[in-house]
Amino acid sequence: MNRIPIILDGDPGHDDAMAWTLANASDELEILAVTSCCGNQTIEKTTYNTMRICTLLGLHVPTAKGRPRPLVSAPIIAPTVHGESGLDGPKLPEPDFELVPMTAIELMEKVIRESDEPVTLVPTGPLTNVAGLLLAHPELKSKIRQISLMGGGVQYGNWTPAAEFNILVDPEAAEIVFSSGIPIIMAGLDVTEKAMIFPEDFERIRAVGNPVAKVVAEWLEFFYQFHRSMGYEGAPVHDAVAVAALIHPEIMEMKDLYVEVETEGDFCKGATVADFRGVLGKAPNAKVIMGIDRKAFADLLVEAVKHYGEAEK
Amino acid sequence: MNKIPVIIDCDPGTDDTMALILANKIENFDLLAVTTVAGNVICDYTFQNARNVLSYIGAEHVPVYKGAAKPMMRELKTAPHVHGVDGLAGVELPQSSAPVETEAAWDAIYRIAKEQNGELVLIAVGPMTNVALALTKYNDLPKYIKRIVIMGGAAIGGNVTPAAEFNIYVDPEAAELMFTSGIPIVMCGLDVTMKAYLTDAEIERIGSMGSKEAKLFHDVEQKALGFYRTLGMNYVAAHDPTAVLFASDDSIFTGEEAGVHVETKGKLTLGKTVTDLYSDAQFDDHFVFIVTDVDRDAFVKKVTQLMESYS
Image (cartoon, rainbow over all chains, first blue to last red; front, side, top):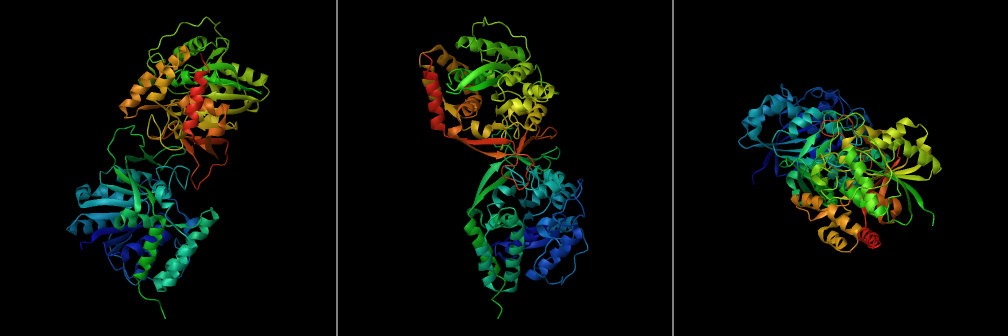
């Protein structure tokens, strides 16, 4: 079977980490590179987290550090959600490899150029690196098959009532990506708030017993603590939906919509604006995921951690 | 029966006309005044139309006060594709012989609100300009208004742009001023009004009831139906009637309390009613009840019954 070549770009982040755990476990995906971006924490912290995650997962592909700040907006970080390190909770192994001496954009350019097949990008943080790539290398657009991203929400926000965190952090980058003409799969809050992993699922994952399973269970515990304080029944593993959409689209409901990003406004900066009623008469530019079979999604994560070996004795 | 003292602020407008025809027959309403504003069409037309409609349906005793000719700080945008240039989609009515009121809409709203000792319900189904000017001129107005039931906005989506509904889009500053006034507001936005629709057949049935009011109800909607047909729909949303029926009896509706602000600066989202209904991030104040659903069968039944009471 031909694997789908992908590049992972994220700001780990507990849910980025779990998205990558899922991607690396899949026989259907081939990870060509991993790049960090700033978002949940500063670029120094998300890059260090990226390296620790890759070390834990045994994911040894070219890895590069992203742009240290959004294109033009001031940085925002999310320590209330992910802790001071950006990935608080379980102890992780120290990095056992070096970054490639390139920027994230340089690495993406190289990998896409060298790939025989068009590459799928999976950004799960602010879209700074991806927008930078599209600006610097418009000639590579035809070699990007699609962008499966976690970001936005066509009905509501989380960081503000109208905007979701990843888009709010770099709305200009998001607008560049949404208007690029490249097919977009949007895993926004519309679906990710339904992609809930419940405490009983944490136990199923912990029971798998290998070192990765134990860490994932603890990531979920940590992530759930914050969300429980907001009234959630479980941990919404937002970023993993962007990966799951590539391997199991059949467990999701998607809607073709024309989506733009608001870059201004007192209340709406960073909102992903969808034309539900076809007011603009424009062709859809995104497959917006609206729903998911929660149980099947949880099972996917449980199966993924089994990939990382037998229980420790 | 204790009647609800009501003022309807509107911009007739075809669905405004439906709303007035229905309101005139609602038993628990004491319709004290109608105020008019520029919106669907220019204010000279909305004023004349309100007068002529009321006169035609036997409500000539309800005074009509003329309001703002344009939004607070923007140029007026109208909607002739739905309402015609004249606001009644080409339907011609005899001129009302009622005396022409000279009091401004915002002054009338304040005066009547005070007279009603805090019981007044204001139903606002056009741009919120008159409401905002009344609030601007009279600092103590909020304590005299029980609540404002509006047709406007949408928690999700829009109709004039992807993010904004027409009434709010026309005068976003006025709407934001109203939403931050502290007065309890019921927002009948597109979330519910697109579910409170009348089909071609239902409107035909009303049109054949025999009264001249029922025929007017039918005739003013024909242009809108034609417009909706171009969108592939054989029905028309009864936007403004939704707010009127809610004010009379909320039992067939469902909704939720929320905070609302209006975007007045955005490039794509100008005029969007931003709610915190579904978001982790919440606004400080929750003065707004957002109506999200209606029992449509019950809605159609009520409309039909009210129209049957004309004979």
